[in-house]
Every structure is written in C-alpha cells, then in structure tokens.
Length: 115
Image 1 (cartoon, helix red, strand yellow):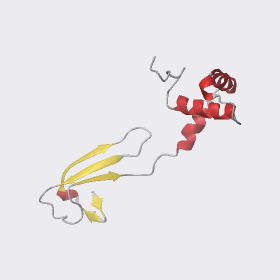
Image 2 (spheres, rainbow, N blue to C red; image 1 turned 45 degrees about the vertical axis):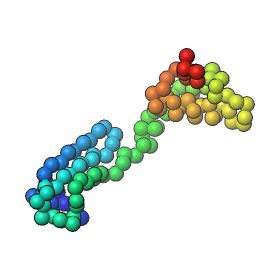
Image 3 (cartoon, rainbow, N blue to C red; image 1 turned 45 degrees about the horizontal axis):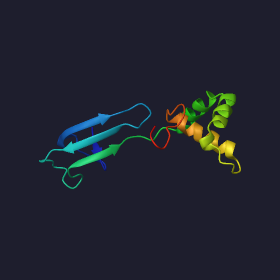
C-alpha cells in the first residue's frame, strides 16, 4: 500500500522507482496515473525520502580509530602548504588532513598551476 497524506493511492500509481544506496536513506519517486482519482493529493511527480539520515558518529569514530597519531603528525608537519605560522597551525593542519583523508584524497596536493 502506498499512502500520501493518509490517502491510499496504490491504485493510482503509474510508476515508481525505489533506490537505496549503502549509508543513505531509501528514496522513492512516485508517478500517479493521469486518470488518478487522487486529484489534489499529488500532481505529477513526487520525491519521497523514507527514514532518517544515518548517524555519522559511528562511521567517524571508526575512521578516526584507524588513524595513527604519529603518522597524522608526520603528515601534517610534512605539508608546508598547511602551516602558516598562526596559532594552532598544527591542529588546523591535522584537521585539514583528516578532512582530505575522509574524502579519499591521499598524498600530496596538486600545485595550483596544475603541474
């Protein structure tokens, strides 16, 4: 059964698509038939998100648990582009590296001139 605002529209469906990617909430797109008797409930297409977004805490904790403090410190000190002499530069460099690593950006940054 498919309900929209408490009204059963199962018989009015022309098409639907359900997508669920790991780590994301399921998403369903519903298209009602042009002859739908559910007029006023929905016109055209609807994008419906089901459920709550996943809690990022456990994934972040697992990611951070896998980081070697010594390797993080060494990598931050080796990245001169992240060190600017301002207060807390090492902490800011480490946080920048962790952001890069979380996004899968490993290694040296590409120079700004593209070489």
